[in-house]
Image (tube, rainbow, N blue to C red; front, side):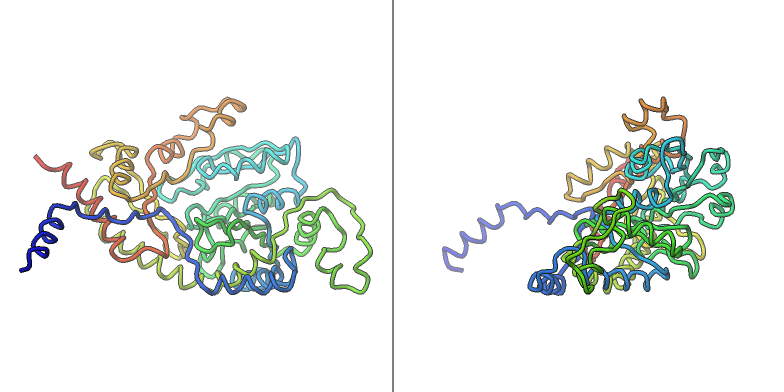
Length: 403
């Protein structure tokens, strides 16, 4: 071996091994198709709500088995729009699960109504339907059932208990989710979806309202466009675009752009492939993590189609070798990102102080706030990434059992 080759080998032996690449908790899966899709609205000059939004809405309502779909700027504005279309306001109560992203409760506050919390089933992370009945009062005007992490809530029981009270599905995480043949967003009076980059499909920011109620759809459509009596894209393509419409109610500007919708059309075409991949890797996690007794992996009830927006486990801190937060620290040190599942809204400062709530008021939500952990699951992960996550968790478990 030449002298310089011996030096190179020796130097390589002394160099530390390269750090493994970080594994993100979530990452959007985008490619050349989305890049090319944006060209048409850019070149046409129609950038705001227009033909691409209409096409995205048509494709989305067909995929989710609903009569109407209205694209919005986010799931938060979709939820707010749904409440506004139901004319919910001061003096009204809206029931929401105590364990959910804060937007579910925030939109109720923004209407002037009062959020009323109900505890969750810790095995599904969704609203406990049996406790729902105890929270209904004469002032209850709506119920928001959250399909958390992609698993539909128990809509049969919730709808039966609700009776004539409208049920809105917060389907932010549940594009492609279902119960039997009924799609998320098709079972209540309305559904609200998110296209944030942490979701299975994305438009950057963006949302969708779905409904089978024509009168509801008409009112929501008017409200998302400032309250205009004629939608803007209809006016612009009509015979007298120079005349402004009438405005009979005050509304909002919750319109999606054609730039976002162009991306959304491509992403929606990939949804079923994305979901198949996520289900395959969720099954892998369930098999490979089954031996860790203190880590409860998520389950899908019979007849449900889980959309697997996130893979959220529960750390049994009575049996685990460390707290959930310490576990997350250990994984972060190895380049593996995690997050709490979400938060218990009744424990957040605004809600805690305004309504005098205590952690123990909703014990299942409290425990899931403290002990839930989402591990990486998304469509840009490789088989090696999934294996690394499993190996890291198994190593922590083995070290705990070592003498």
